[in-house]
Amino acid sequence: MDTIEENVKRLLDELSAGNCFGEKVTLVAATKMQDPEKINRALQAGLEDIGENWVQEFKEKYDLIKGGNRHFIGHLQTNKVKYLIGKTYLYHSVDRMELAKEISARSVKNNLVSDVLIQVNIGCEESKGGFPLEDAYEAYLTVKEMAGIRPLGFMAMLPISQDEDYLSSLVDKMRALYDRAKAENEEIKYLSMGMSGDYKLCLAHGANMVRIGTTIFGRRNYNN
Image (cartoon, rainbow, N blue to C red; front, side):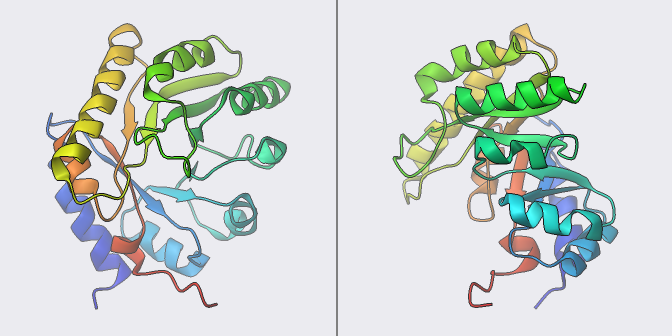
């Protein structure tokens, strides 16, 4: 089995070629259920960005991890935003207006600007949060006008499917949404799509940020 260090270096080398448009790809390590020692090893190997799914883990690990941009990539309850304000490099999962308003209010109260991505439910799945594609651009425009919050792009998760043409079409739709926003706002820079099982397809259709856990750390042990 390859080491964490080898996995990070191989991925960074692979991603250095960019996406299908030659854009820089940002690798965010999905660190859910990974202990700080493993995360620190990945950072020492050249990783720069890490993403937590759960607020409790984010808080517990925060001071134990040395360096790195701290992303929050999971579903976020409004009553837990207060624990992340000022510590989060990028919120990937602004999936409803209530959450955007809470991040805005907390950010203004703390005299800072929080960078966020608008989450889109591209597969129209009941099990996933996010704005429907047809509402996502208007949601972005609304969030853009809020104080203390700055949308830098969009995030989506592909549904589980063996139909690559279908999945590719969903990434293409997300890229079109991204391009539309970027055409009127030069601050737009991230289309966060792709995990260990589908990141190559996402990059081939225009994603420029990927969230990868298993390929770096191996499969999680849910029995601990």
